[in-house]
Image (cartoon, rainbow, N blue to C red; front, side):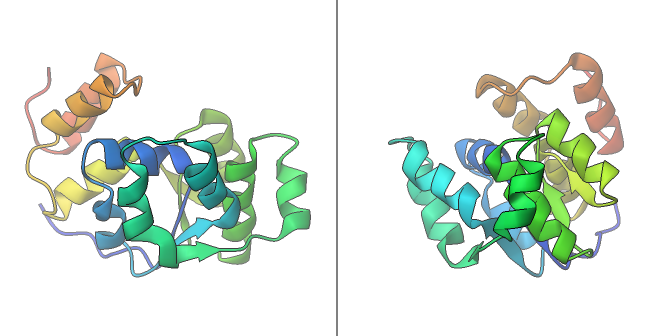
Length: 169
């Protein structure tokens, strides 16, 4: 597999970061981008609203220097359609058209595409990491995501495995 070039900028929503930390892969975001931004609203959600989840210290260690403030007026416009974290990521993304948004929420992803921005989900990021040689097999990572509560259909898992050059389920 050919190694894709790193993204110039990845802007992250909370759920992919939490899921990646749960499967001990949060550092992949940093490996796949020249620059990573966590919107301040997302950071607040991670640090203050996620309680004592064991992955929070991992995220603080990796991303505390990557927090950026989003435009409040733009964020509020998007908050009529998606949650505050996704709205903040969209607000930052609109100011930086080269950005790739890391987001799992379906409504957030649809709104991102409607705004002409690029978006990837947790499983897509894992596929990129596999193609770049940062992880071995994709199958155990997808299985681990499922164990940690991410809903992935068998069809999607098979599609991802085939894209990674692995045997489907």
